[in-house]
Image: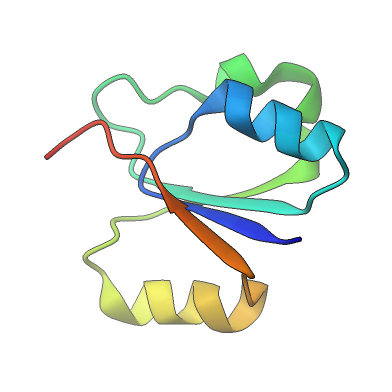
Length: 78
């Protein structure tokens, strides 16, 4: 399965997904509490796009490139 996280990095979830052999791509602005250092050893196994999800053209580019099977939205900001 190829999940795509939208607008948020939920580190424990993605560490577990990578540990189970899933290809993970994540999109986020890294504002508020955003910090990729918590991904540690799996950071090289995750494709991360620093982007605002309101940028429709860039999000479409990501979808076309990654072709996710599952999309999970974890947002820290409303």
